[in-house]
Length: 113
Image (cartoon, rainbow, N blue to C red; front, side, top):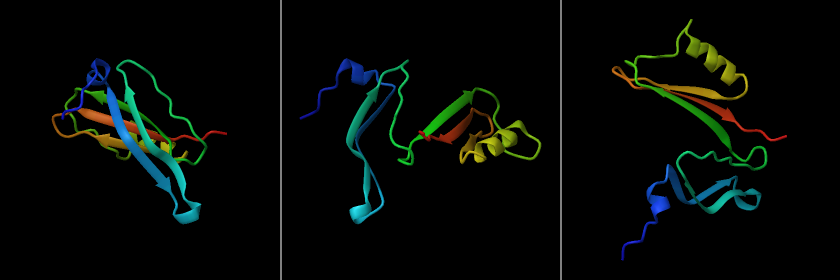
């Protein structure tokens, strides 16, 4: 039998179901997620919180409709941004195929003090 979908679920910007994440093994294992499901509505802001070191990362993606071909390289603004992110254990991903679009994603590890 097919599962019924609510109107809110049909319009979801993102959905994840039955997520599990474990760090370590045996008696030292830390269960960060146990069967977590979430549906995010369009136009909302959502924060994921937890103790430092539990694997949270903040992502910021920027997409354009340009011609593509952006790349990390000496003397580019993207390289400077990648260096600054690396200084705080972050990373910069650039996906820019010829013809576009370009998507640049900054990854920042979240640390709660």
